[in-house]
Length: 421
Ligand code: EPU
Image: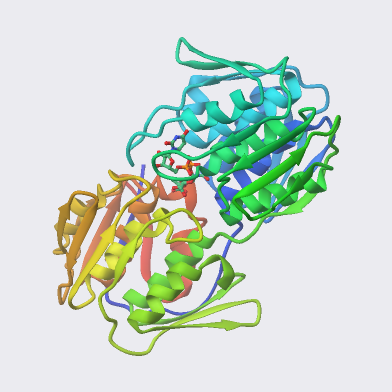
């Protein structure tokens, strides 16, 4: 297993290119199962999650391969419809093959994805969406077993205790595009990744109204064709590099980053004192004055993203004054607090809120990455800490950040990957 070794205290500057969005690519690759024709997805990051998705497609006897930032899928005549435990258990997002299989094969068996380190992750909304279309679903031997032979358009309110759901919306949408009749999804997730999936489905010939809104109206069609699509840039990766500029008092230009995807985050950072400006084909994040403490609550899009909560905590840890961060999507997503504490951060957890008292300095330490975004938070903390930080178990990072040590290295960070002894 690898670890990252960071010598902190360097100011980062220069240009970084933002990769394609992992969370847009995953459901889009699953959507290629809706046709027999060849599809090409471009701007795909080279990440472990993409390799897992390719493996899942191959498990259905679908031809799929990644070459650079392009994934080509040729599903012609595939018949299999089971996504087994050993594949699904390595990546929760595998659940997004459920909708396409059900629409195309009229049945699906997908291993129940279970919870993960960021807390329980139920799939009741996925089931609610598919049942509204008439699918018969049971859970047996750890599998979601779905029969879609009698599906027809339906009307569903897809909201739960924590609001809308990205992948439940994706699954219901992908099931509906090939299902006879009109389907209406109320309280659909409107994250840019869902809008990008809608864009891909429309290129395949799907009839969808309401792209990027909370109400999607889908008129089922008989057949879809293959499509060629370039995924949107990764707003979470972009946000993480913006924070790298903020914590290191640096000046980073983010090629491909889109302000319209980052409004909540940019608003809070600019209020705090960071300069974020649009530049041709990207954004520039620049430390210009002492930052003020922040008060952040995670919410569904266009609110502040839960996938940036951990990284913000690292910035708050070194920002003078008291900052508060409240997690409303995954109330247990706080494992990183203990690790940041090892580096000298002063953070108190009070229910779903973390109260962060900014300290003058963090000190490098051995820390353990617990999940993808928590790992990024530890890297940011390592960049600003005095001395050496070893971030262990970085296989999580490799699921979601393309060549992070190379990108940070080019910006001036002293960072290297090492094999654990
Ligand atoms: N929820 C339910 N029932 C469901 C589904 C979700 O109650 O059936 C709840 C969840 O427990 C959570 C909330 O609804 O409290 C939102 O979860 P959502 O379903 O939107 O999450 P997801 O679709 O499983 C995607 C991203 C996550 C990101 C969340 C929230 C992908 C592949 N994953 O997950 O990304 O945190 O949306 O924005 O798109 C990451 O990239 O590190 C990551 C975890």
